[in-house]
Length: 239
Image (cartoon, rainbow, N blue to C red; front, side, top):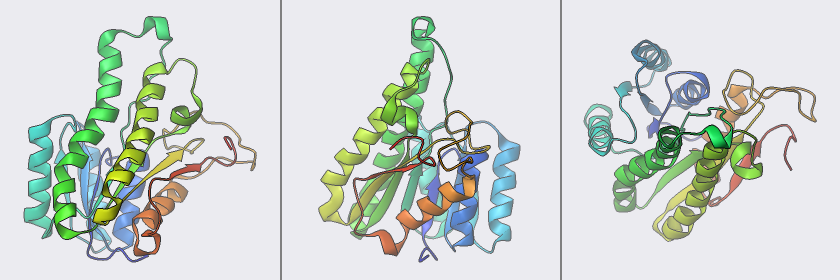
């Protein structure tokens, strides 16, 4: 895939599926900004593994809801990796299970703000440079809960559904400016933290590598005619 020389920011990429996406971008020649909130050891390991693949990589411990922190992360990427963010992957991670009547206002705000405010802050921080360059890519990672709903995850469902809607809104707003915006919706991914585990109609769970490959394709030159779409990667679990 044609990704060499691009600068990509993957949020929540210190471990699990975010890490798999960061490494896939590195294998395809992109320079990577690895982001995590608190797990420095995982962050540094992912950065080291990306660099071992022959690309530049930096790590940023930043809460993506923090506007100043996100701005500093984007500025560091420009300074250390030689250019603005070409590809943004919003990969918000919280997926708690709580019956609706037991969700506290604090838990509701934590989940919805991490998923939606985080995507808002990161996208707004990079979109100006993309407009100036006349091209860019934003990929939002949602999940089956945002498409079909799920028991005991009303806050996650609401936020992931909002992320899908944000994808379509931004795709409409920025298509004529050379920026494509798509959404990937994984579930039943082994070790990926995306939805519940279990066997799918195709007879197995998906892999983190399969999700990462799809994300890299949507960020590549081969996918410039695709925008505003939601790609379910779930083995036929939801059609």
